[in-house]
Image (cartoon, rainbow, N blue to C red):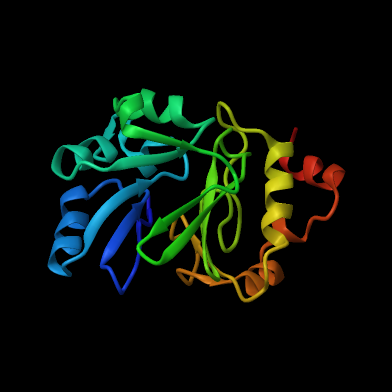
Length: 211
């Protein structure tokens, strides 16, 4: 499914958090250990199993539950997404830190800001680190997340895309899937090429996306 997982951390303290740990948990931990990093948390963009683990269809994906067995840390999920994360992964309330839009997390000397971007799911969130945005399934370089799934909302997605469009053009976009010819782009480049970011009124959006 071409998922991306990301490590965000501090060069000074070697502390890192992992974003959307799924599929190859042991491989992620091996990488962390090989580089002498210290894993201090797991950040989840949304509750779909390809991003945090669990079962869908005939597939079972390793994710945060397996991560916590090997390296116990807190899992940071938006307050509206926590129940979904628990349901698909089997982790408990005590494992989860419920966050809201605008909350911040220090990873060593690096600050992560949580941005609530509903639409794909009710509690979808992005993470802003300096001039970088990790966008999960809210925004891709050439598209956006689906809004025809249970819990998704087309109008919410429109407003979330508008919110991200207000970020500076030199912001580096790191999406949740490798769906494009390049793995990342600037927000300015994305605005030029991504059709969904060029829709400036809700009625046109609903005509294209439903809702």
